[in-house]
Image 1: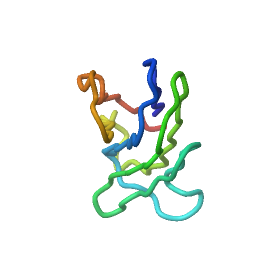
Image 2: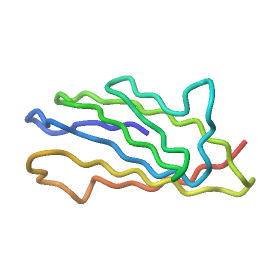
Image 3: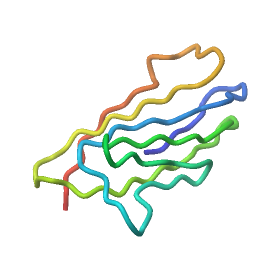
Length: 102
């Protein structure tokens, strides 16, 4: 998942939350990482919460999640971004992608 700020003013306090359709694997490598901020996987709920902090205009934060699928069928993954402060475009804060296990 890539989170990007495409607007002109600095947006502060962004948090990315993603729900993973497959169980999250414990152990090495870490099940989730971010190049900006920190991520925490909840193995019990199969969800990931990443606090990426302030995101400057035109910058992005890449979040990588390692999961072990329980099936070979395609799995949906929904990511949601929330932030503190006013969000003038809340309609673009959620995306769903389909992941095909390999």
